[in-house]
Figure 1 (cartoon, rainbow, N blue to C red):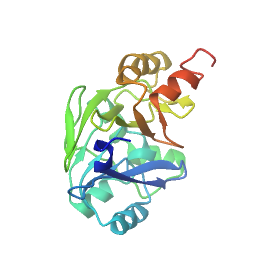
Figure 2: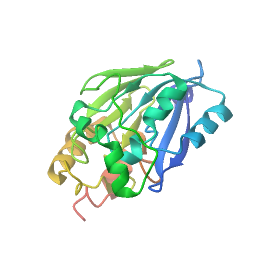
Figure 3: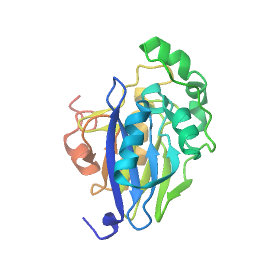
Figure 4: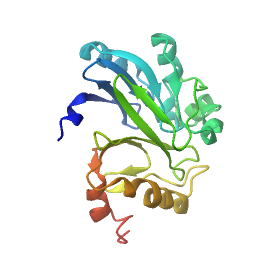
Length: 219
């Protein structure tokens, strides 16, 4: 760990029946924070915010699936902060959150329109932390990865997992496109980059390059 890495703190709040990793990320120096992928269970997210004592300034979305965005509109109203992301290509998902929830038996969700769509090469910031945006379609057309080069750290969403990759059998998914995104956008970031993903434990790009069966030809 470098001194730069110490500038950020994070808490993961598993939400929804899908146990999605909603991440509360903050700048240690300013105590300014962002909530990444508030998929639901908004009360639990607010409890985590209160316990850490940070000030949330933004909500970031990695993509438009319900387990990542189901609580976004409610949390935005509660905190009065803007939503940034995902890429515009996921608009069709965000326009049908209620319908998607009904399909999974999830109620109390709302459709959501971000205050800012994100594109490849954009940057977002909270406190003293700045992240570069990588548009990585495949799991969904508008999936994005948030990458902080100083900390060698990424918020991966459902693009790449510990030992797996995002599912590609949902509408708009493409296995070939996802593998291309990982190969051309994610792996070049460097083996030393650690990441939090949308479900399960985090990992590093180097670990996944070596042992992930979808990347080393063993799948």
